[in-house]
Length: 413
Image (cartoon, rainbow, N blue to C red; front, side, top):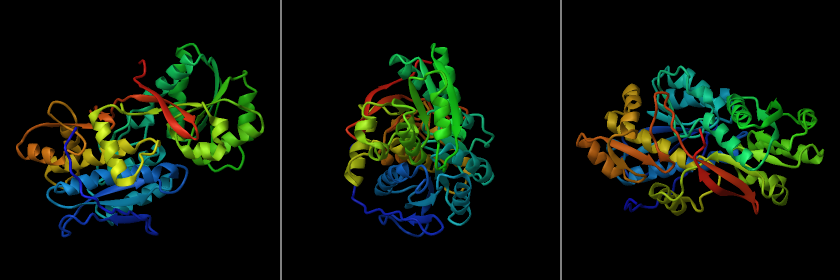
């Protein structure tokens, strides 16, 4: 575990009316900061995840600034609120690039936000974009001039992991309701294929549109199709809780299976801890007994308090840290193509292993012309030709009103 002594910083990132603000960490010179954008859902359907993931980015930048900054300059976070919607995400990204002059961007979370930002903002402006949470399989073949990367595995793997868990529970007949976007469609397809390949039956599946007052029609149709044992809900908390409430009120379903988008204590708080007690879910999750994760978790708790059980805080940290390493390796905060090309150089083997918090070590090795390989809080960050990574998954449950991991495993591919 790295020996890292951190100074305490008071970091506040509040949003302006334009959904942007700069977070200044006052330890270094103010003349020419290196700006890193953070596209986060501070409002909208994924609001439950936005602040926590932003804290992951803050933690990485706090540690980097305490150890000398990027290229010897202070690093500064500039936040853009995606509102968990495509057009606001594009607008926020354009402001980050055109007005704030960011070198690179962490985000977005929702795949339906990340994809249009990558194709219409990041790639045309040569701005590297690293998503810590966008899991849609559609991202892998995207035409983005190699400017889009992610520190979270594709739902091509999460679908298999979910099939492994549900079949191990003895479930044979399931219905699916999924949000009608890239994330929902991709995970519905990958889970359906994997579940049926393992001998299960999907009795029916239905896409839902966010923002509806009622989902009773979709739920009734699903409940009446083939006697499903449970409902798989692929969605986000804001509308997902409405679906759960109506499914329970009308007696359509009593048993539910969840994915990463519903992994939040907020869900149990709104529906009732006793009602969801024991419900199962699957989400990407790092091996928590590694030195990398333990250092990240203890550092987070020191800066922000207890580490929440919501996903993608560790992958947000890793996205910020690996982008900072790439800027350092490129030797420039303004050459987007060089930063892009450096991402695999600082993340992939071979090279001396760099763990979370080991910024000074990384800077020294880069200056000496040595190869480095970043092993993040979420595990190894080895970008393939599509900018994707592999990973492990958690089988989790709601217990006592919060999220509890039951095991972390690799899906059987």
